[in-house]
Image (cartoon, rainbow, N blue to C red; front, side, top):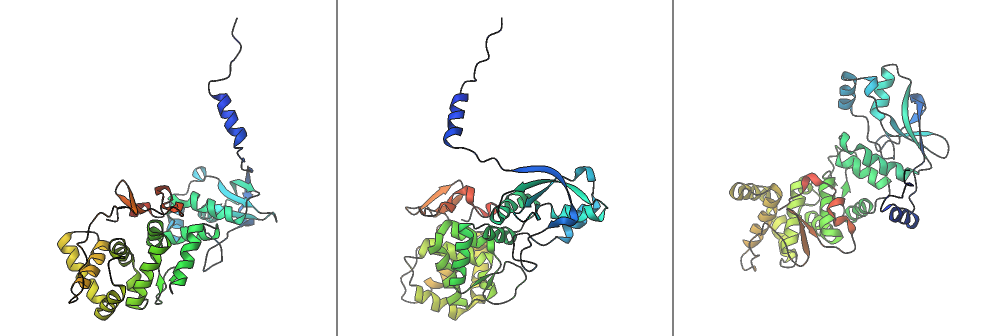
Length: 324
């Protein structure tokens, strides 16, 4: 005679955890939707939302390799007014319609707000070639704390994030991923110091806020912020001009075979140390590990007890780790 089925070991513990921390199951259903009924919450310049404009390159690849059997379900949000909004699958929607498919399978969520749509957009679309700009715009729409803090700090410092792309105006910054990277490691203090120094030295010139300049200035802040006379540094860099710093950086890069960003930071220190009578800055150290810094692997992060975005899991640009 078979024994009565018993509860698996640990199942009671699992049930107790679920009781204490109930999980809200997302409400969705699988259905087919008519592509003509779908809306897209486009980001600037075509709207004020989170979805990037259609990529002609991606459309061309989909047209070339189109296979209806390989077209996965779209991810759709049904808003409170019953309108349907595409979270993931906008390119598939367009190409399918071109090939005569008027309906497509979809995973339709109900009861989520626009902030959650934008959050899902960043999570579902990361592997599909989203740029740092499109991810950052979506984070802002989703109410992400770090993204909105960065936007505020950048504007306070007299700059503007180029979230559309292609702007040539002075004071605009396209290196959004590097700005996020600095904020994650240096918090508000580090980002403000970097931006204000570059503005004071180079009056918002576009070439002064490219990725390598931002990285190098942040590296300088890590090592010398408490040792340098900032007013003298500004006078030296402003007087010499951006081209002189670029030339010095190129020579240092060739000599030390360091990163391009580090070469700009080294060049700043080198130009400062050449001022007669100034108290010299110590040698540039490739690794900065001290009471204010901790290290995961090869990456260094500022310890900031008020900002959880320092954790590696929250890194804005993981492909850019290993600053030093």
